[in-house]
Length: 395
Image 1 (cartoon, one colour):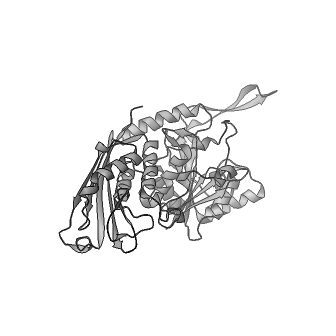
Image 2: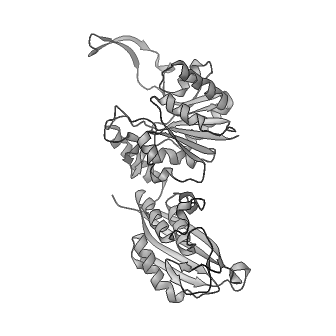
């Protein structure tokens, strides 16, 4: 079974106001949209993600929407939510069996909620995350200029649920639901369309923290959730490991830790193949739970052909800092029969420190051989191991 995720981010948030779409505002140091997209890109059950965006954002998408290890497609949003979702649905792969749809402005849904919603849709055809109403609900009628409202009836609270996203559908059910868009149906979510198309929609227990950012007053609440979630989901210290290996070939310069090394061969790779920078990049990204170097700087992207790995490391450090983390220290082991790295260690530490924004004393580099064992021991390649220790920055 293959699953696609659609992120509905095509609106501008008329009720929110502001100079930019509300999904681009930051909470807890990360854009609301980034949080929602990352949830789905990192979910093991999701095979591809399609994001519907306002035209101005689509024309110049933020870095976190530019590259991904999973298929990530960006499409234009429409005048209404259902138009945006229709555009995104048309961009999903033909072999997709289930589609999960999530509001960009619900940045705190859990991976477990996504899993439960998908599972319910597989069993029942359609599913919606929802919370049972806790308060007594009144249907009202407005009098005159609508400034006065009067209770028309009291609804049975036990039957009332507050819909959230994610919402998930089999491909057939969602196709039937979206077909109603062309007939002029104007709704606030896809579950309503599925209902009108005659399909039963199963309710999945939602989450109180899965708030929707609708008004500016919601941002302080979101900050609290982001702060509390960070405090309970991770310790103050984070450890990440990195590893890289490249073959030695003729006709390439050898660069390690950003420093040119005098040698008769260099490392083969899409970028400058600096294994020291690559291992450190993976270590710091791993400690920040931010993926790896291949996700952010894929070797299929021509922008990174012969790129300086120092620049890639600097961009990785920006991601780390955006997540409220700082590097305490990095420990690196370079495994090579030749050349000896000891004469270059001080220069490498200084160069790396400059691009990482840390003191050189925070970086340790050691050179080892592989005692003639395997390709590295035969002098055919150079490998590097790195460990990074990060901590939360004080607020």
